[in-house]
Amino acid sequence: MRRPGGGVGRPGDVAILEGSDLRVRDRRGNPLLEGVELSLRRGEIYFLLGPSGAGKSLTLLALAGLLPRDLKFRGRVFFKGKLLSALPPSRRRRLLGKEIGLVLQEPGLALDPALPVGRQVAEPLRVHYGLSRRESLTSAEAALAQEGLRPAGEIGRLYPHMLSGGMRQRVLLAQVFSLVPDVLLLDEAAGALDLLRRADLAWRVRRETEERNVSVLWVSHDLRLARALAGRVGIAALGRIVESGPPRAVMEAPLHPFTAWFLGRAGSLGPPAGRNWDEGCPWREGCPRAGRRCRRKPQPEREAGGREVLCWNPRPR
Ligand code: SF4
Image 1: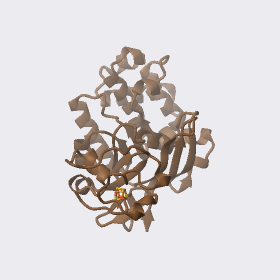
Image 2: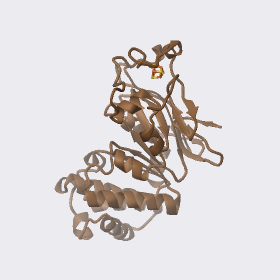
Image 3: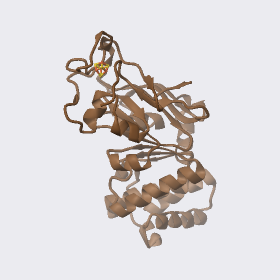
């Protein structure tokens, strides 16, 4: 069975969150995502890697249904088999938080500047789990303490601007983990954390997947973290995922020339001049493997070992 997006299905694989043919354009009609296919399986950690501007964060926002309003979206998002992208925004918001936890790259944008951070952790617990005010504040304190924000009672009374970037990110993590979601969407979630906190986050994410079968989609630049933690990685470029598979296989023997470049291989192809996929593979001018077929838009090709690549002539480098 073929799974979209970096998803070569093994028997028994069950996708919990799927994006199919995700397309995003800016208000001038410029393409930002050009048909992303991504399938997140239950209990897996999937790292979405790639250079800035490749569409990683947009993919995550498109899956969560949280794209800025001035962007045009087309495509389908399934969550637990239901068409999430067809739900009214109010129902989608209810799912978001309780079942799908999201940590954005810039924690300042996700927090309300006018509310103490303790209440921002407590409020979703009241909304989603019906806790009383006192119960939710007690749980919020415990969640803040779990993130190393101590004394949690005092820190909970502070406003976001009174905290460092790293502390704000930990507040968001406290908010997300306290809701016990089934899916975690993390956008550079370790970016503002120190080494110790980063290691702690990695350990907790792994524990969540092992003990609760949580599925994690992690947008990152951190190849070492991906290699240590991921079950699969996807490489984003020019608004699509050009290659995916187990981290070791992808990093040691990339099949797509762009993956080789991204991983710093000598003599490999860099970003192409154009980015119009509809006119064929954007790398075909200058790609030593280019052939006639490369004038057509590459489609995901399944390869051995659970890999998938957007290339008409893939070869390990
Ligand atoms: S599709 Fe063709 S041009 Fe594009 S990377 Fe593969 S071989 Fe090169």
